Every structure is written in structure tokens, then in C-alpha cells.
Image 1 (cartoon, rainbow, N blue to C red):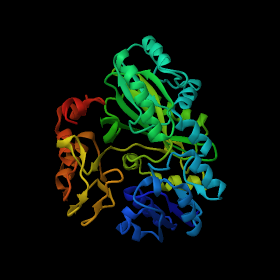
Image 2 (cartoon, one colour):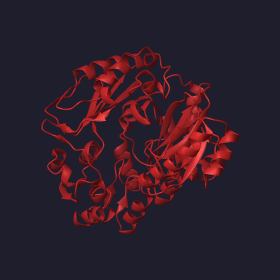
Image 3 (spheres, rainbow, N blue to C red):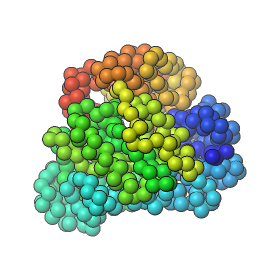
Length: 448
């Protein structure tokens, strides 16, 4: 087992990893930008090093500075968290070439599954359903137009190296496709350093279901059941839950088995998430793999009792999975709300500022993962996540009522937050009856 791990991230996920390491008897090295200097969670690490200015491009995305910090801090491994360099195959390769273990999958598996086009090809090979679309990257606007005519509108333009909705466009006419093609390329190039895009049929009113998997370096891959991430705004997840409502047992089993089959074919060896969309008839289609820990991983931890961060660390240290598939039980229902410093009444405009007061909720089955405190400055340079509110109860109805109570109990002063919108969603009959789809938020609150 590792003696010391560097955490190449910030905020909530950095604190989450520090806590897991401390419980495992592992020392931690934190890194921070000038914008995060003085953050209290840094005090919980054994050492902390500044790696640059506020901008991520000059700090959290600087591979050379992170490697230098790891070498100075005598770290044997690096945990990338989520975001920043977490899905950068080159970073994983550099870490290992410097004899520092990367706590994540091999760079080969990451490169294969991180490229959406290559992942779709692999999915087809192992019999995992994919959304009809281009079999290779699009070379020209003309090629995109011809394919769209064959598929039928609407279609979806997607960045091959993308995520989080960037480089993605839904188009419903040929004219819109011509206008959006170069825009999507430019956005993908700016966000991911690659303008490669592909096209697929746009499935109307789908649900978004993802499967959590764990693979070790001994050839074992298991699933930890599914999460439903259908409540979204512009492809950004707002609420996640498990189990996925209105997913029948047979479909649930098939979608989880498909995720395992894909990751076995890729020789995947870490925590990862295989994402699908499910249409109104219950047909599911593979869309992408996130080769990292997810923001919403606590949902799975609550219903399975398995600590995913510790599992990642043990896998990276070469340990085999300590359980078989049939031993992984799913208990009750869990829901997570992402609490962001954004104003839902003003088109979710970021609300940078100082947290004047914060009072986290508690009680049976309530968890609040957050790094903020009274006096904390929400920096304008990164995402606006304040914390993640997670509840776990015996049934979905009980989990919704528990979440409503916890949201009302949560007190945050100084910045606008998404709490009011989360409360509205919890009370909405379409959500409560689980008839929502991925356009539910934008359709119900058009200003979103």
C-alpha cells in the first residue's frame, strides 16, 4: 500500500480524498493555486504546495508542476479526482514514466474509452447497443449533411474528446447543421485540444442512466448498479439518484451487464462510469465512458456501502477486488443534489462571493460533502460547487421527503444557490412520479 499520495485537485473532491487516505493510514500532499491559498481543507493534508496562479491553465492543468510537487513531497502516487487532468491519458502516462502511480485506469484504457468514437467502435464489437450515427470521425460539413439526411433529424453533434455538454449541439434542420458544425468544432478544440467530432441520431425525451463499475489489475470487473442522472440543465447534471426509477429489473440487469462487458473488453482497472440513454420504450444505448471518479459517486456509496475512493486506491496499489458481483447488494434509495453558487432565477448565473454563513443539515441518512466554511471566498475561476447533499432512505418516496427536509435545513448566506430550484424539483409531480426526461428542467423552467 502507498505511504503518501498527492491529490492533483481542489475543493470538495480533494477533501474527500484526504479523508479516505487518513482513514487508510496514508499521508497526503495537497496542491493549490493562489486562488485557493488559505483554504481550510489544505490544513488537513500533511503537506501542501502552491503550483501557480489562479487560472487552471497555470496551476491545476500544469503537469510539470504537479509532477514536481509529487517529487518534492515524496508521493508514491497521484489521485486526480474529477475534472482538470483526471481523464488525461498523457498525464497518466507521464506519472508512470516518472515512477509515480496514477490512481486511475491505464493510459491505454483511458485513451481508448476516453475517445467517444473509439469507445463506440468497441461497444459495437462486444454487442453493446449504441445510438445510430457515424462510425468514424466526420471529415467535413458535407459528410455530416449526407449522414444527417440518412439518419433523419434531429441529430446530435458531439466532440469525440468532450464531456460536460461542451462541443455538443442538437440540430433539427440542415441549415442549423451547417451553422453548428464549425461552431462545435471550434468549441471542442478550445475545450479539449481536439476539434474531432461525430454525429448521432438524437433520441427525443430520453432518460440518462449510468453504471458504476470497478475493475482491478487481475482481470476482475464488477458493476455497482446504476444511477439516474436525468435531471439536467444543458447537459449538466443537477440531481442524481439510485436506483433509476421506471427501469424494470430485466433492463436494469442488461444495462449493468453491458457496462461490465465493455470495460472487460477495454481491460479497465479502476473506478469508472459507463453512460447510457434510455428511450421511452426502454431501449438503452451506450453514449460514453467517464474514466474517473464521478461527482455523484456518493449515491452509489450510500446504496452499496462501498467506499469508491478507497477502492480506487487499493486497485492502484495492485490489490484484487475484495468482493464478487453476487456479493454487491443494493439497499434502499439515495438522491444527491449538487448545491452550486448559482442563481436559478437569473439563468443559473454564477454567484461568486463570500460565504457569510453555512449551516449543514444532518440526521439519519443525510450526508453533506463540502469544503466551504463561513468566510470562504467562492473563486470565479473554477466550477461553482459549494457541496453535495446526499440522502439515503428505504424507499424513493422517503428519500424525497428526507431531501426536502435537508434542503430546507441547509442555510447558506452570502451567495445565491441552487437550493430553491432543487426544492421546486422535489415537489414537482413529474419528478415525484418519475415521468421526467433530460429536457424536464428546461421545459418546466424555460429561463434555465
